[in-house]
Amino acid sequence: MTAWAGPRDANAPIRVGIAGAGLWAERAHVPSLSRLADVRIVGIADPDLARAKFLAARASDCAVHHDVETMLSAGLDAIVIATPEDTHYTVAKAALQAGIHVLCEKPMSRTVGEARELAEIASKAQVVTKLGFVLRYSPAMRQLKTLLQNGYVGTVHSFVFFNNSPQFFDKAEPFHWVMDAERTGGGAFVEYGCHGLDLGRWLVGEMSEVCANAVRMVDERPDPATGALRTVTVDDTCSWLVKFAGGAEGQFHVSWSSLVNFGFQVAVIGDMGVLGWRMTRNWPFAEVLGNNDQASDFKPFDISEKYLRGIEWATTWRECFAGCLARRFVDEIRGIASPEGPDFSDGLRNQIAIEAIARSLKDRCWASIDDK
Image (cartoon, rainbow, N blue to C red; front, side, top):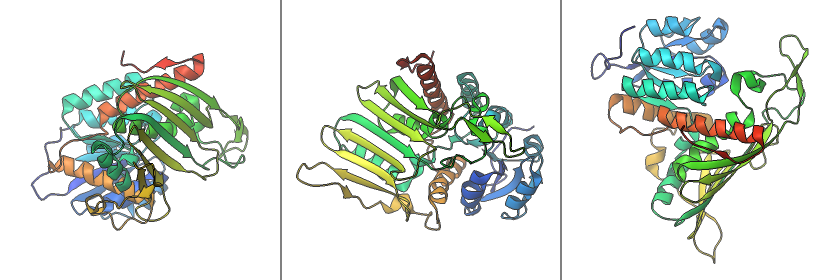
């Protein structure tokens, strides 16, 4: 395959292929990329050709491929990897070696070794890489980051991340591939916790140690194909404490077997005040609140127009957050926006933290988060 050498001319659309035709591709990536005038979705690859054709029908002149290799050979400028995570390494490596820009869903890989190799290849390839940590691209989260950088809370001493989801609340819900430890390395702390780990690093800084505890509330679920019971080998719910290298502490909780109630929430607490972020049902699908006055309560902040520009079309949080991420990905490819994370180096740091949580759960101890 020939290395990517930029668009054919300054006005040529960026040719994007999507690997994986699952629900996230349908609800986030296809709507987001389809809204960008300077992008063409030229291919969708999935062994389930019916699903691939269903999504391809939503894009103009989009080819369907049974496998990613064929799609890569057809000619792409960029690829979105929305396949199960145990395939991320193989697909991302092939794309990077072809000189193609990569937006990969989280987590980046199955192991630290795979993540390290991908980060090294990406650095040498000099292409734009992004991870699907879409919470960074919530307009409200961007506002919170700005307030934090401007000193609203002073010196940070605590970070809180809370995510309850009802995704597998029903005990009769069929077995899903994310429940297989051989494929994922963990359950809720991998699938949901990776978002919290990324936000903690982005907002507070590097983490040095972790101590975790996990619960599996449903041990068996029916196989969707046969109906026979399959053993669940990952956690449903997980909580962990973190020590940040700069001295702050962190508290994390995730569950995919709980009713939404609190849903997604984040708090950054300092010696001068506190900032909070939480999901909402209405535009822009999250809000930021703060307080640095002992005599008053939390107050909502108006979200700056610069974080909302170009995303007014979004009708769901998935479209809103993923749309902002897609726009930044394309702008960096075009060279009209400076590179920022989450890139593959951030994906590596995230994988190191995930592995540390797994060690803490196995050994029942504090585990070091280091890059050795």
